[in-house]
Length: 132
Image 1: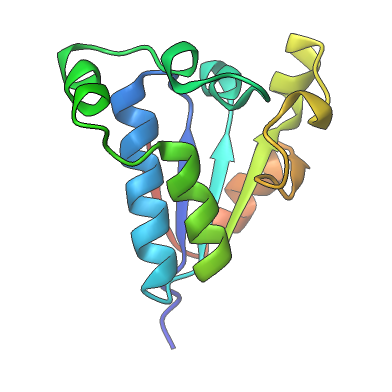
Image 2 (image 1 turned 45 degrees about the horizontal axis):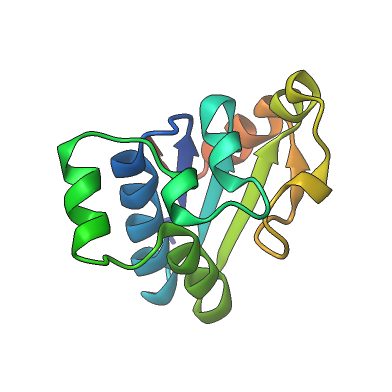
């Protein structure tokens, strides 16, 4: 049987890319497709605990349109995917170290925990990978 797992590598703090990652992850997860999201580099700061959406997101013109039209928040989409489907999220252990953060700095209950890039890439060999 073919493995249809989806692996999303999210490195960007741009609102549009974070939003797309959340949309892809949540739709795939609720469609009974296993999804793993690996958050690294600049994207880690987007998941800081306590930020409101106005502070959380940086982006271009489309970001402003999403805010004006009150598009579903990416963090809510990730949470829905976890609640309704097989969605697992991991934060890059190296990025946490570089930032001087630990899991308490991140939005509660969103991440399974830290993971190294080597392990993520090893697991991603089993499925399809999307980089944003």
